[in-house]
Image (cartoon, rainbow, N blue to C red; front, side, top):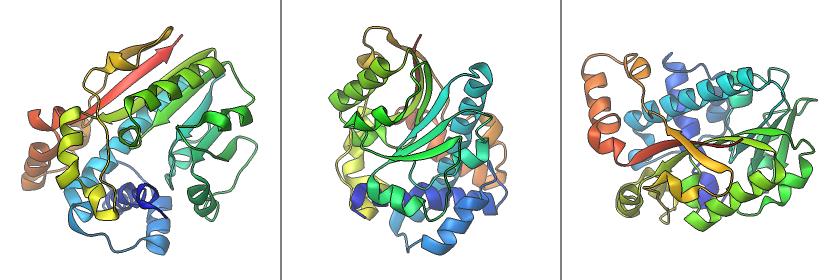
Length: 261
């Protein structure tokens, strides 16, 4: 896999690590895949603090998806840049049609561990080229998650992606995590993704920059809610909160919700 594709192993490791410890989420599929496919991570990418962050981030996304699926029973779910993530298993389709989308090489790898069904499909595609949307016949409402991939797209590419989603669907609900501009600058030297060969990333400071037409910014969500950090104790909780839940961390990592209604 190329550098960007290899970044999928960092959150996979994190989810496997926290699942084994009984923290934040139960992800037996991540444990299974990491045991079979995981390679020797180095540097910050194997940090337990990063693993905790990846686990909490996924739990936050899971919670949002579940609520959206409960609120909008006629919507389809689209996970762009799904990697080897098992959100479809952790959340369940709840009688929704679910589409996982990623590069061909990633989807080929994914098919070794996941099977399609009437409600679940895997599509090959690039977030920067939305030709894959033609393979989604539903057009009424889409619940879209982009976890850990927006930083590989520049602002114009993100705007084009959201514009394509808005053209295809009557309604869109989107949750996307982003680096700030400061985080993107610091990432050139100090980001775990450097350990798998990625050095070019992008950041967003103003969520309104992606607004266009009926596609609007709704609100910012907490990246590391207290109910999850409270699962840690003692010095581990103290260190993690300093690294990923303090004021400086909030200037680096952002979680934005958008909607076309």
